[in-house]
Image 1: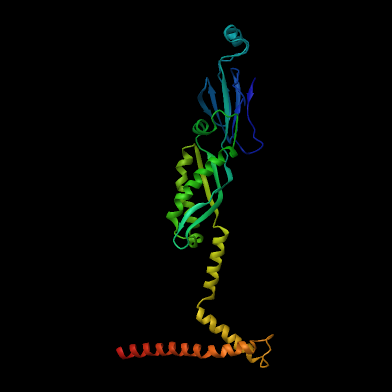
Image 2: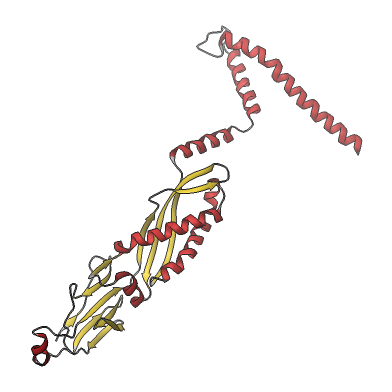
Length: 295
């Protein structure tokens, strides 16, 4: 009794053909064993005849030991003309497959103008339609793994990411609050492409979208300026700190406090700062008087 089965120890095999090279001469009554996480497609004479689910199945080929050899021996020699193959498809979830942009994506930013973006993340797939996947992707390969298709799927993802960026946000400063929206949009855009290959996309994640180092430095400088707040108030605070240090060092030693030269400069600046403060207070008083008189 001939028994046909396949066990994958690597966990990365998507399709395995038996025999791996050439075609087989499975005997009439051969036992096909299919596991719960597998599907088996039976090919005979170059055509897919049936898809087998989990269980034990009996193959009804035209190969009958000795009798077939006797009948076909005169015309075909020792080889039987009744060729067949079994393709085992792994129906498990292939998770944590990585994707990334090999080349930067040009993005028109509303604040930074034209910048280059790079992104990466993970996704998970599962074979949904065995015959479609086998005919479109695996073909007649004896062994087909997840690495064989990942590069092709990456190109689909990056292309859809490129078209989805402009519709989700206008500037990279909006990225943190739009990560989830962008992930959902890209996933929706690639669902049909994956389904056309006989695959089901279970999840899709964007781990990061980054800008070039020089742009990152510009963003850091901008955030640093924002952290200062009002520049006029900051200068007044710095001046107040300097006056306090100067009062603690009446000797004018330049090693401590402002020193004599800096103190003289501060003396020239103080009237201007006081004058600006008084003008602001005067303007506020005029506004109050205007509103009170109008009421």
